[in-house]
Image (cartoon, helix red, strand yellow):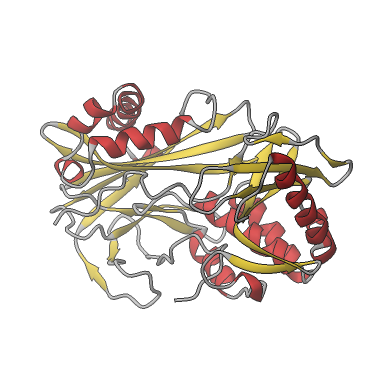
Length: 376
């Protein structure tokens, strides 16, 4: 199935409902689904009793602290469904990914969702909850495997405000307490911009006929929108409908690497995405080189790439403050990065990672982010 490099978010389905919830089965991303009705309630934030909400929030926060301090212990404390599908090794890898973004401010709870149904869900049906906005629409929250389940959405500032991380924690109430069934983290804001800001800019670039800029901005919007398989924000259906109506540059359709000709030279691009840095918002591009005899040759190849990219896609300057171009060898960790500023040209060559650049990416988190599926 062909897809564009900027398509990184699943199709979701908007459910209608209030206290009495309609449930939608969404195992396959599609707008064509069949609803089933079961008696139950979903409450959000102030609709939840103060003591119960504090207990739920505290359980989610305590798990994250344990996960960061001792992944093996956190694994032992997870819900039964999670322990059957997530390994301690996966938590260890996820911890390294979580910490790799830099220093973070204390987490703050953004939203708390509590579901009460006669039985647990075998398939993680989505429940309409927290109806808000204009027009008024709900978030969609997956039911857990027990009759009481919850999702807590937390945010924290990264690297002194260069970005914001959102962490959603999915919990079952079992064995007398709240146990984590799965969790998901991603960057929800980059240099002050989240899904709404990226989406607005993407539509503007689309109207201007700047397909490359629009593609990367739609990708950033999709990534900052994502809250995992068990929480879908209310803005998602409108965003996805708009994104699906967009056709990006034909040279970036299909699967990477993407062969692109720049100034008569062919390059294989494997990554193109948004990065936040203290010096601005950058377009990050990774391309493959079969090898290079020394770093000077890699730097020369990157500069030739940038010159050709400037000639073919000059519109990038309307959105980004610069380019970060990284040459990589296939099947190797060897890489060389070059930084180019739109207002002052090339930075002095340096090995990767480039000093002074906080590489905060809009790319979706790796698949090792633990998300336990619905109970069998």
